Image 1: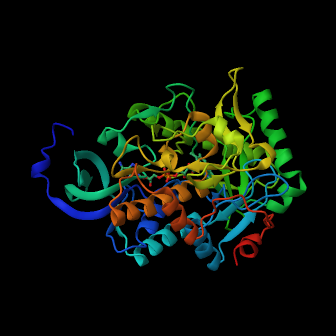
Image 2: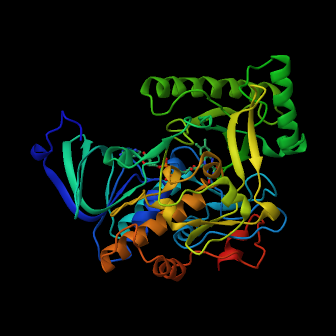
Image 3: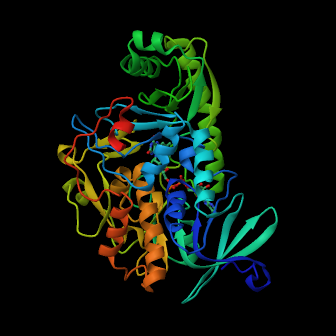
Length: 457
Ligand SMILES: Cc1cc2nc3c(=O)[nH]c(=O)nc-3n(C[C@H](O)[C@H](O)[C@H](O)COP(=O)(O)OP(=O)(O)OC[C@H]3O[C@@H](n4cnc5c(N)ncnc54)[C@H](O)[C@@H]3O)c2cc1C
């Protein structure tokens, strides 16, 4: 509790059964799962729209499919509902990608803002936007009291169960749960401002060599010094809008996202790099001559900050074993994709695949802060080592963590079980009942452009 806040004098805004903090892919899915019950669910978000990274900066869900030549679909349940809803609006296509992170599910992020909030409202979730968690006033036996700030002032929200989906584990930090700070043991992954460009002649780009040509041009530009690009690799891909592309190319390293001076510097540096890329694309890449930046990510993309210590901690060895333990709550087949500085000091991305392009199971204990009674932690601040986190952070997995935590919170209230003492087989039954995938499927998925429907109808 911060000493300058006198909690007793702060008005109580709500008393709820389940409080979810942060409406990213993990938090929104957690709230949707929890709302499949008679319990009251509140979802609180600091920005003016839901979705977190899924709508702030990205347009592709990774992690639904394993990479390689025989992709399997390894996520389902509420994550499917999100994509099905977008698909019904005609705003989804699969972007086949044999290696890399596997096949991506491409969507329109502006539409996704609307889809998240409509689904949340229909489910009966009380959504509060523009409201930031600033303190945890009390962690009691029966309830937790959180303090929020918004334009109306400071407010308390009292909850019987809390799911931290803030990405940065803000709740766990304030509630006293232990965590590892990115950068403490290994270098933290770099940050990226994503940007979108319009008026791109994609047929001309493809006819000129597409991605291979782009990589060559980037390399040449760096080596000749013609454009001071921050890296020699990076992706630019077609969007769900005519003649538009989206990029994950900017790279801002060596700055800490939880230090406000450094985060400010990172935002400024990210935008500076984006416009260096714009000039590079216009001058060097066939098809981009008449293109312009039309959008930058709402904030710089932060890959990791706090990783909470849970009852289990996902390790690189577990990821690379391809084993599915008995307390599995989701599968992940995504490779370790670690955006970092290489030994030579050069920026590079380190990739390591699950053997045979398989998948591993993520144990329930990774979403339960150590010995926690009534709190869960999901999304990019779940319990994992640096390497394991670099594999298990795609949005199909963060949504899957969210749905597990939402159902776990409901079960914990229904059965009067603690988060740590929860009956995991019962949670797994509930997950399977809503379509979660907890064992490697036999069937190879259709990852053609229109394959989503064929895999899911
Ligand atoms: C640059 C970049 C590119 C990536 N590319 C891909 C990709 O193409 N595909 C893919 O699947 N994954 C990708 N990832 C990984 C993926 O986006 C993230 O791991 C995932 O989105 C994290 O989801 P989350 O819900 O845990 O966190 P977030 O999406 O960060 O959501 C956290 C939410 O909590 C809110 N919040 C934070 N603090 C507070 C507070 N104190 N009070 C109230 N609200 C708060 C935030 O505003 C936000 O809405 C990428 C990540 C980055 C950074």
